[in-house]
Image (cartoon, rainbow, N blue to C red; front, side):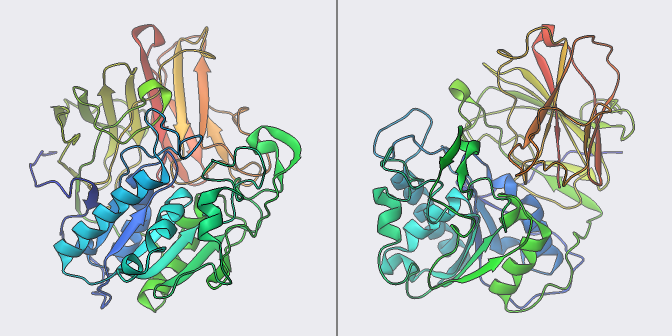
Length: 447
C-alpha cells in the first residue's frame, strides 16, 4: 500500500535535501555545493546530478539547488521586463542563498556549480574579492562566457560578448578571479549556444562571432566533454564525473544512481504567466498524484495525494515505494489542466518542481488531444538519439546540433489510447486527455 507523510520543507529560496539513509559508503568531502540553473530553468534540472553525488556518499544536507524567482533574462539587462530578471536580480538571490547555506552548515566556503546563465550569475558573484572568499570551487557547464553572439547590435543584452556585463567579467589578462579553483566544461560542437552561425538564433548565414571554445576561460581548467549538448555539459553522467572529481579530489566510485527502498518527494508548483516561465508559486493550483501502470498509464487506485498550493508553492511531501510510475495532475489558474507522467524516482528529493503546460492556442488548431515529451536535462539530438513518440520519430525536432528539448504530438482523432514516449533507454507511457476540456499531457523524462 502507498502512504502519504508530512515532513519539513527546505529553505525558502534554496532546495536543500533532507537527511535520509543512503546505501553508499561515507565520503569525507564536506564542502557544501550549490547548483545554479540556467535561463528559464528550475532547480530540478540538477535532480540526477544530486542523486549521483548522494550515490557516492556525499551528504544530502550539503547538496543545495537554487530556484531563481524569475529565471529568464531580460532582452536588455538594464530595462525592466515583466517576469524576467536582470544580472543584478540574479546576483541578489544568489548572494542570499549562499549566506543562508553558510549559516545553516557552518561552512566558511561553498562550491558553486552552474549551467549556462547560472554560470554568469556565479561569475558575477565571485567578481568581488569579499564574495570570492566564500567560494572554494567554481564549475561552469556550457556557460556562454564569451557570449552567445558578439555583435554591435543589442549591446545591452546579457549574452552579448561586447555588452557591459561580459566585457567587465572578461577584462584583464586572466578571466578568473583569485581564490576559487575554476573548471569549465564544454561540448566539442553540439552546444546550441556556442555556434559560429546564427541559424539557431533565427539568423541563418550570419556569423555569431562565437565558436565552440566560447565557454572556455583564460586561467581556468578547461575540459571538452565530447559530443554533448548544451545542458549535458553540466547534467550528463560524463559531466558528473568531472564535477565530482574537481570538487572532491577523487574519482567517483560509481556513475549509476543507487536506489532507495522508499522515496520521499516534494517540490514547488510554478507557472507560465504571460507565457514566460517563472519559479514563483502558482498559488491556488490543485495538485493530485496517482500511481499508474508502467504499461498503460492507467491509474492504480485513488489519488496518493491531493493538495491546493499555498504561498510556499509546495505540493508535497509524498512517500512512495521505489519503482512507482507517477502521474502528477496540476489544475491551475490561467493554465490548462496538465497531466505529467514520469519514470519512477530512484531516490528522495525536494526539488521535484512542477510546471503546468502553456496555454493551448496557436498551432494547436484541430487537435483533439496534445501530448508533449520534455527533456529538462538535455536536448533531443537527431540522429544522435533514439526518439519515438506515439510510434514514430517526431518531425518537429531539428537534425544536427541538438536544440529542441520538447516535442509535441497532436492527435486529430481522440481515442484515449496510451501514448508511448521513448528516449534512448527511457520509456514512459502517458494517457491523452481531451483538449476540449482544456487538458494536455506531458511525458517528462529523467534522462
